[in-house]
Every structure is written in structure tokens, then in C-alpha cells.
Image (tube, rainbow, N blue to C red; front, side):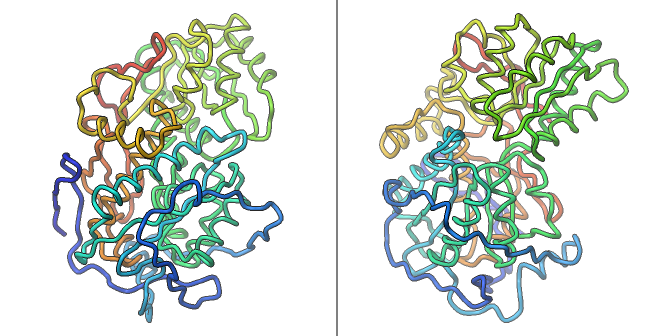
Length: 464
């Protein structure tokens, strides 16, 4: 294995290229037969045509998982290089590579669709500016990115995945948004040996169920890591703290709670109340009333989107003004800026990416590129939105991965399992992607930030 560095768009990018890369094509359709790409377009699919809501009446597959028998590196390697996989690679031609995506473009969780739209903008830039991505075989291919709206619904996300694999014949799915969708598509994609790359979810299990789902890897800072960092912070700065927790009843937020509780174990910090809500709930008023009356002086707020705005506003309206730690997935600048400043001032969160509204990055090369690309290719998106930054950074990471890989699914999966100190233009200093055959949580460090006067401000250095 060798570490390679090259300059792309005016910045240094580190990536790992494996020697002796597997050249087998590893894709099968759901019927088990080869699914060659039928697309020959040489330009990225515009978001106006690539995005489409899937009908709720579309059939939902009942396909089950086909995992490897053990978590050993040799078993995983075997799963990633099936015998007899030869011939054309689905989604790859001499001029294009087809990538699929799914996210909430519409619906209650539509703010998270910014991740998909920002990624689409970056892929358009790469095609227009560089003529595509040059992979390790030396061939330059344009990126054909096709994505569909799932409205943050796991069933629709699965329908989208089936359509992308069986009809659009994509090479891989990238940046599937949210825990429900990322987990919902895993069995189908892994059975068909289709890479699920850099799913934008903080749920550790998306990346750590390696033996059962060897073709899947997430992107975001893992919730359990975030909870651990926050727990250590409270134990250090408020050793007698009483903590109230609001969390979405899913695996990601439960990871956050577990990490926090493990970090405060053996200290005097106490969790005095913990309230959950469902993604389908229209209000968290009753949960907030209980938390406000619990006596907690720290609010560990793991809510997202509408629930985050409502919980922050309700806490203030109830006269409850604890130190508030907001989960990074809910620390959306667009949402916070719509709440009266007096109700958001001082909220703390964690981040691993640069904030477009922070003047310290005004002359930063990575930020300059981001703002330029967003202005040209996604002018209707709010470039200050941290969700757009996540999608853009994930897209940069995918392009780096493709550059280091042969145009086969096996090669991409081999390389994504040996990332070493990979940095991108929007990563904060000291934040890098690192993986191994047994550890697929790529981001392990973050900075604390505080909401002051309408924007996030970094506090201190990198934490892990």
C-alpha cells in the first residue's frame, strides 16, 4: 500500500492507493445476473431532471441481507471479490461513471435535501472544470449523478435504490441521507454487492456492521463519538451537572445517549430526565415540559430540523435556560437563524467542517471553491447551510476515492477500507478520514462551536 498526494482544484488532497487492486467486477442485479450500464451520456445529470419523487404505490422489495459469515478481514475480502465476477462493470463506460443517490428533497425533513443538492453541484463542477474524474486506470469519466426524493422515508429510499440499481444501473449509491434510509437500503445493496458510499448519517452501526454489510460505509461524525465528547466536556466543566436529554427514537440518537452516559460514568454528573420522540410526531411540547421541570441545568438536545427549532423555542418560552448542547445533525444555521436571537444565544454543538459564515475562512482555498461552485451550480441553496457543507464535503471525498481506484466496485471498496489522513477542502484543521478493514468510522475528531450573534463560532481545538 502506498500513500499518494496530488493537487486538485488548488489544494492538496491525500488518498491511499492500494497495490494489487482487485479488478473483478462485483455487481449483480437482484436476479443475480450482470447488470451492465446502458447509459452513454457524457455530462452530469442536472438536478432538475435527476431528481424525482418515487410514487408511494411503487412496490417495496422484501429482499433480505446476504452478509459474510464472520467479521474477519479475510472474510470481508472474500465477500468483496466473488468468484467468477467478470465482464462489464455496471455503471461504468469509457466516458462516464454513474452514481445514485436518495434524500428528502421534499417533505418535513427537506432541509436535509441540501446535502444531495450540494453534492450534485460539486459533481457538475468536476465535469465542467476537469472534464470528469480520472480514475486509477488513467481514464477520465464524467460523473452521471442520478438521485430521487425519498421524503426521509425508508420504504421510498429502498424503492429508489432498487430503481437506481435495476433500471439506472448505477455503479454505486452515494450519500444516502439519514439513518432510516441508509439502514433501509443496506440489505438490498449488500445482497447485490453494490457499494453504499459515505451515507450521511451519524449512526455508528451503518459503518460498523462490517460482517453483515461489507459494502456500506457512513460519513458523518458518529453519534457515539459526539456523545462521548459532550459527556467528557460536561464532566470536566460542570462536574455536578444535572442533565436533561431529548432524543429521536432511532439508533443514531441512542448511540449519542450511550456515548454521553459512558463518558459521565463514575462522575457526579447525573441524567435526571430523558425524553424521546418519534420522527412522525408533530410536537415535542410534552417532552419539553417534563424536561423543563426536571431541575436539569444542562440540556443535551439531540433533535433535528423542525423538532430542534421547536425544542429550542419551547425551552425559552417555558423560562428554562440551561446550558444547551445541540447535536451536530441539528445544528443547522438556516433553522437557528429563523429563531429569535435571544432564544439561541450561547447554544453549543460540535462540528468537523468549516462554517461558510465564519470570516476566518474568507480567504481559505477550500471555502473559496465551495462558495464559487454553490453560486454557479446551486444558486438557490443557502451556501451558509451546514447541511450543504456536509453534502459538498462528502462529494469531494467520493471524487478523491474514485481517483485512487480502478473502475470496479471491488477496488473502490478496498480503498475505502484503507483511508489514511485523507483531507478535503472543507474539513477543519486536524480532521481527516481514516479507516481500516475493521474500523469504518471515518471521522474521529471534531471542534466545539457556540452560536453567538447569529452564527457559529469555533471554541478551542480539535477534540476526540
